[in-house]
Image (cartoon, rainbow, N blue to C red; front, side, top):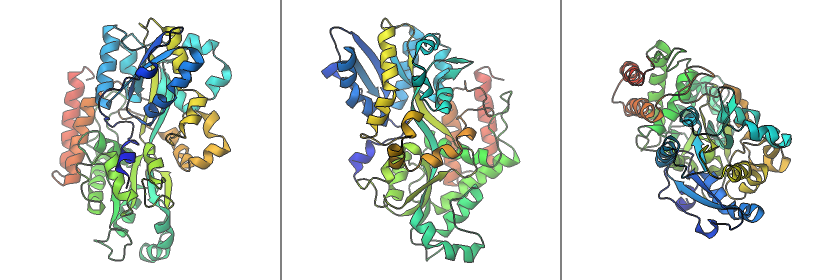
Length: 441
């Protein structure tokens, strides 16, 4: 396993160290300079490598700062609230859209979109443009990076052990459509419970306290028909559906590769890519890693499917312009370029990720390079955000605190430290307290 290469393929949420300033092209005499804040992701790697082409084409320099997930939010909000405009363009995780817009410092893109070449706007996946950029009927961001929780599974195992599985359970062995099926298949491929299993473990889990655990858990909750909130922000997780989801979520720990309590996404990927695990839930940002011979022993044996339960979790990022910028037009040129089709297609030579542009991913050559596209879009209409009160609901919840509260509870469920009933009661109590503190209840 090439750990150095793997670490460069981090998901959209992982910290990647200190800031990087691209001094080689941070100034262009004729066109000025745009200052850009980005999170360390495959997309920022791509922009870093391709930005000199933008400078050559436009005469506009790019001062690009790449920092960790936590810091990019803190710096971004501070810059927008203060009005200092240290950054002309900011990369924004999708749950932050309302928070950023309500600072009053994010530029609406309406005027630019009205003057834009229609083919440019139409080239975005319709879902991406709305999900990442639309707030109360106004577009504020262009999408730069898709993100969705998906199912990865070993095609060879599902084919080779189909007869044995059907003889044992009376059903066909296929990618699970429900979380109950996921647990049954996970147990079948865990050597502790099935000595004939070709792999040691049925599943691998990102159970890290916080973002890791909550991102794994929410598709389980929704798949069992549960909700964290209702339309009025009442906390509704302490219900039979919520308890059932916690119970099932905890059961998978019996079938998991060790270390899951502290694993984050790239760490939970290692047992799967090493050939020790039959299937797992993870972000599409990692799909390229498991089909790359440099980072995966099972690169030619991986299948992709929608998450069980039919309700995937949304990840991904957009790009916004600081309304206080002194370089608005230059900032829009950079925004347009960084989210455009040429960059999206060239980026595939740097890291294969799911493009946000239909005019790129519909090309036959691109489809061949991204084998998970069909699975990615199969359940996209049902995709949900972390803090959706309901499908299409409001999203302005204190995200960091919410993730720690629910993610910590999920982590303890996986560790066997609390029961499903205790988890549901505690989640109800602590999330209700959070919402009251911030004026929702």
